Image: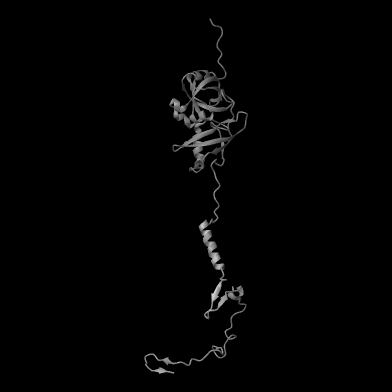
Length: 283
């Protein structure tokens, strides 16, 4: 008779081979951060008291990177672990590499999460906050520094988890049934909108400059009078072009007494003329 009874372990930790969801034929788990574990893991976990959802810490045996995930089902082959493709890439895993999967009991409930979408197209969606909150239902927890993938209308959007609160040494929070505030940061591809001021193109500016030059141009070449003599053109002064009127015009003040004046040099016409319709000339 065996007087020693096996005492169940109070924690869970295993070295497992990791595979991406697509290679295992389970692409549906790519919409969250829940993994598949073998049935033997469930047999160990049923003896462990756990408050709230089961959360697991995944550590790489090749790097110091760590992340936290939930579990969806215990249907993976013995000695293996199936994780979402986006997480497989973020952790720089390679097929059949070994990872450490351990049960995490003390992950705090999230209060604030700061996120940064990679594309402005995500924030341009109708009510992106509601879309994000709906997609995050597939996530048990979030780890600061990781990049998650949100799928909406068959389009994938990458989102960085910039910061999580409360901040602990784990740099992760549980968001399952937690009242979490989400703070959106500017997308990575965001650019400032151009100024609304009127910007004239080169052709418009060239036409305006040419027009101004034509208006300001003054003829300074040589002119020829009717008598054949040459005379230099003198530019007009501004006072000759524009006369400032300081008082109202008075027609009586400038009235010519004897009508239109004639200069003394005007000669009287002394030739002959012909009446219209008549053949005789008249002096």
